[in-house]
Image 1 (cartoon, rainbow, N blue to C red):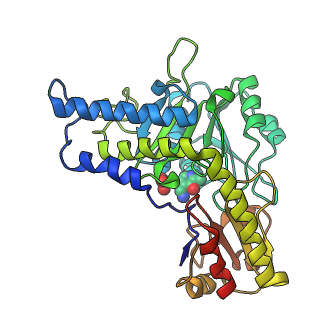
Image 2 (image 1 turned 135 degrees about the vertical axis):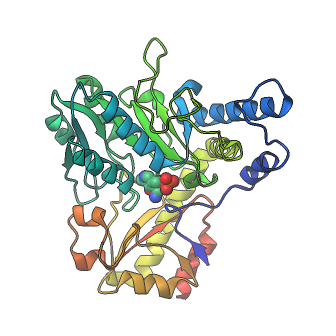
Length: 372
Ligand code: PMP
């Protein structure tokens, strides 16, 4: 059986599991407590993880806030900016192809009186940076556009969008959940990105832990936002709640292993994507077509249309051999909003499947497609 649902979640690295174990048993101190050894050990471990994650992302350690994952990170930034800057304006720009944790947060804010522009996308779910520029107005307080699309794998032109936001003095948030570990980038090179979300389980860390990057200004002050969670004031008063030390340690370790192997892993993903494309073409020929673009994409994600075949039935039949998904929390009444926005018909969406690899995926595993 080959696991090709890595955009949904990944297998933890062995090293991550090993690093987490002590913090589930012996080292149970609260990092916010003081003086005694277990508290200090936990605090040190949290700060070491913050360093490991900031090194992978190219940020300062004090720009990283741990959260429970990208859903929380996206909610925190969008609601936090909307509330804090409500005097300045009430307009938010996003795209129709965002993850539901962005889209539904925006819809919630609309119900509270904010104005949201949902930018259309091209056939691959990408936003035209010019449309961002056109929509920014005096009232715009936030642009939130994902870096890489979870269903199609397409990359947005984040450099252009972040530059537009920088020049117009508009905050820019990007949901980078799908690109961490699959794209070699450093946030240092993107001064226009004010906020970024990520989740550890998408790069071989544990589930239930993520982070936000909150850019600090030239005086070292983090961009202020209203906290989503009020309480004990952990994480610089931005995200209250006792820190999940074991999960944070796991995320840090996953970031470290990811950084050490990044270039090789990306190369392997590109090779394996080519290999899988060849296998699928040989096996299915004209019976399939590829929804994903061939360039400017996250390596290892292929969205494939099996013409005339119902995707749910196909996934069920494939399940003993291939673990994959339709790419969205798709129910019979709610087909993929991303593919719909990209212009695919109901029929085409209903016959599309996403195969998503990780650096752990091997060519040998992929040959299962020859045996189907
Ligand atoms: N954004 C994107 C692009 C995602 O793919 C996901 C996970 N499917 C999320 C946000 C939410 O992440 P989590 O479930 O870890 O909160």
